[in-house]
Image (cartoon, rainbow over all chains, first blue to last red; front, side):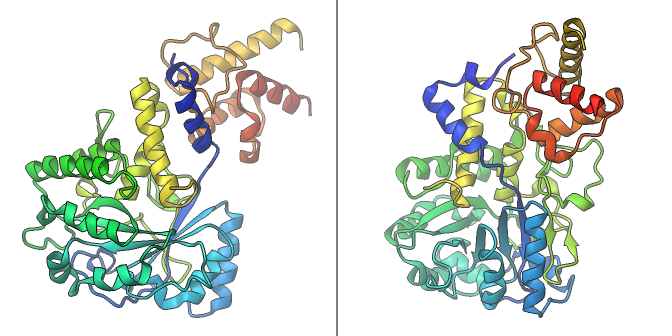
Length: 332
Length: 87
């Protein structure tokens, strides 16, 4: 029987020890139903989640809610939207209470005097050309100025099939702005023409992601095993999908047999009562879901599966470290 | 509880863990009772919850989730069960 000690040398064991004590318990919160962009392919709007519940307008109720979430054991609040920066008082309710990550399109700058070390993830859907097609404008021009050199900010670069072969130029610009980048893949929820993945494109994008990691090791926050998982949808011979996804709201998880999952995970709507099925769109075909966090979590919750060999366990450690860096549990 | 009973309890817990977690290449008799299940075997809270359900049924005790950190080795689980049964 393999044990951690039998598989890892001192250096890897120390890395394992550092992350194994983190015990991250995340949940996701829609801060608002409103956004200052309307992006083609945004699951929040394509699946009409912005109409799922009315927003809670009483700020005191946000504070009380966050307190209850902390008592429930949540130690990482992941704020999504709509666009959370439209309601900074609500963001503050989380930030004052627990480690908080704020997803944003970067068009409004989070004031650092108020949120000095809150982790900010800026969505980016490609180069100028793709951004204009999918989001109506070149958001990078604004977001890179707003956050240039910010040590608590990274780009969440959602790579589209049309970006294959052109990823390097986008990453170079991010590097030039003194920011980090994490890579994930577009799930074409709205079936925008030309933005669906093929097996060949997946192979090519994986090779390019690996290449970027080697070329920009301090800028790209990623690892090759994650690239393999997200491009193939396979881990240890299993396929990602509804029966495997770890990011299903706990109270709505009636799967049997129950897969390994995120403990206490809930995705809350902005009325603070309604719960969404999972971390992304409930209308999405889980077999084609490319959500980066869901795939990372899939690896992380399956630790024992990765005790088959030293390489498997090292892969697991690298994915966990990547997640911990992206949510500021360990330094870059 | 005699030393023999304690040993039997440890072996039985090992059996439960091996069966419930589908562990390979290990027998109840060769399972180190002091091996850290969390740090060394990668056992997580879902795994523990699975094992706890069986332990609760078999030994007629209630195990609170807050007590999971105390259940980090087979020997510690055995001691926990003894304490619960004695209470």
